[in-house]
Length: 202
Image 1 (cartoon, rainbow, N blue to C red):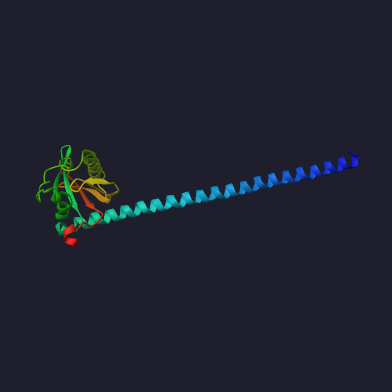
Image 2 (cartoon, one colour):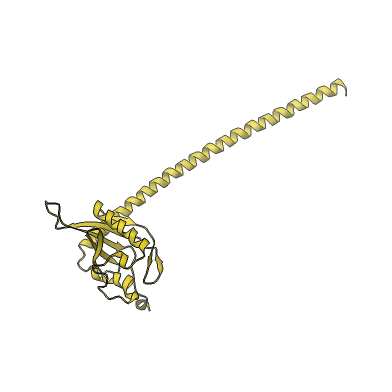
C-alpha cells in the first residue's frame, strides 16, 4: 500500500471514529434528558396522586361525619333502606343493643332468624370468626376515638354466603357520661349502599 493511500485510510478512520464518538455523546445526552424528563414526570405524578389520596380521605371523613350526625338525629331509622346498628360495650364484649329492619332483612331474615334475634348477642354469634374479630377491633377503635370513620373492607354475609364489598361508617357515642367518668359506650354503624330484597324488585 502506498503512503498516500495509507494517509487517506488514516484520515477516513479518524473521521469515522470522530463521528462514532459524537454519536455516542449525543445518545448519552439524549438519554440523560429523557431520563430527567421521565423522573420529573413520575415525581409530579406521585405528588398529584398523594394530593388526590389526601383529598379523597378527607372527603370520606367529612361524609362519614355527616352520616353519623344525620343518623343520630334521624327519627325513623327503622325504615331507612340501609342497614344500621348499634352495639353497647359490655365488659370486653360489644353486644347488639339496636339494629333496624334493613339489617334484619339483609343479615338475619334469610337465615330464618326472628326480628330481634341479635339483641344482646355479639358478632361472633352471627359472622365468621375472622370477620367478627375485625368488627370487634373496629368497634373498640370507634369508642376510643369517638369520631366517624369510613371503612372499606369486604366481609362474608353468612345469610347468603356472598362477599359484601360495601363500605360502611362507624363511630362511637358516650351515653350518661358524668363527671365520675362512668357511662355507657356505644359503637354505631351504617352501610354505604342501599339494600332491597329481591322479592321487592320483581
